[in-house]
Amino acid sequence: MEQKEFRIPQLRIGGHTDYIILRVARRWKTILPTTKEFLSIDFLFTDDEYSLRNQRDAAHGYMESNMEQHFSETLKEGLLYKISVFQVKPLKGTPKYNAIPAEKTILIYWSTEVREVTEGINKNNSAEDIRFKDDYSEIKLLEAAQEQRNRDNLFDEAIESSIIQILNLSSSGIVQAENSSLEAIVNTTPA
Image (cartoon, rainbow, N blue to C red; front, side, top):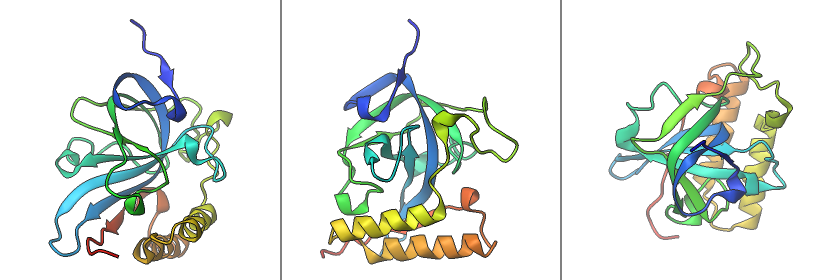
């Protein structure tokens, strides 16, 4: 049976063997500050219809920390991937620690198939294909964080501060934005 393409709004809780094409907008490690335990690698995935006003075409994704070696050369920021054989899970943790307000997350696991999409990509690794225009600029990322904080009093200042720090390092040339990993500090103390 031939695989068919899904879009983020079409995803349902459970396993999926069909595929979805996503851009990795952001990638970071989640580490507990008290124990320094490395919990997971998290992602902000965007679909081709994504916009800051219509966040239903974006998804928080993650993989367990023991998967880092398995996917160390894939799922890099800014690149497009065809992803199949994955799980869609209910919200991971509390809304406070998810990249976007959504009810579902994408779980990458051992049998997940990940293939970089290179058709329609120029030498600077940005999509020329109109379906995947890269409008998730540094300014829009900061605006989205500020909008999230305004909507949700639980939005952690440490997360916003980390985003600002990454943007500053990126603009100064110290860190390449598409290759940087944001280590999100998960504050486990009650608010």
